[in-house]
Length: 305
Image 1 (cartoon, rainbow, N blue to C red):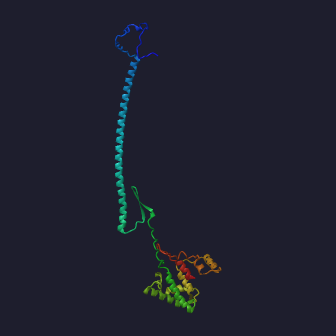
Image 2 (image 1 turned 90 degrees about the horizontal axis):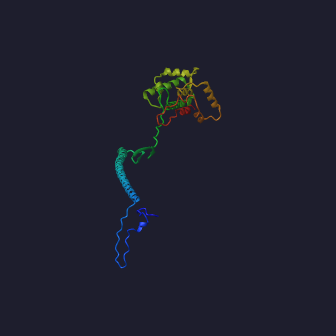
């Protein structure tokens, strides 16, 4: 294959033209000067192409260097901004945590100064301070209930007053029987009212609405009970009226129900006390807040039995 990098001689006949004759034998050899070789057009084009590529490569490298420097500068600035934000965040978080601890310390300090217990759990989590009301460090003991106390009213007898008056009648009836003379009963009630007004007392007194009653009012009341004018009154009947003084008169249906209950076998005091009657609501006692129930209705049933 012919070498394209060198220019070939034209004409094969003149190939040896101008060539020096060989030296004679024994004569010293002389050096032939080399003829300059002329570069071909392809070599020139390739050299130009290499120069162009070198220029392009140099340009690309400069562009890559400039882009890299700009990118490094942007990354460095972003890193500085990020570190600055980290520093600010750390300072804010530290201040918030200290404020949270101060808030918790304020509650603890107040409890120490007031000598009180902290019942609800205090929770400190990172930058949040909360009082967990659902978690109790201790349980408060229940508040002791107040003693049972009757609701005293001016228009009705209290249980101790009814009991005291009933005992007096029972002592008299032990000698005379259940029927007492209306005159003696009127004198007894009148004297009791006077003693209540002058000497007071609780068990031996009468309601405030009875304080103005005189002998005439007592006799009128006893005559209403003794509708047949026999001059005698059953003390049990009188005590039933006094005990249920503020209750309505039972209906015929209610009376029939009670009669059936008494006719039934096995009716005793317990069944009577646990039974339902028309006076349950009207004779009930209103209890105080957080107080033991005063079972006035139950006590009335026991007295009636």
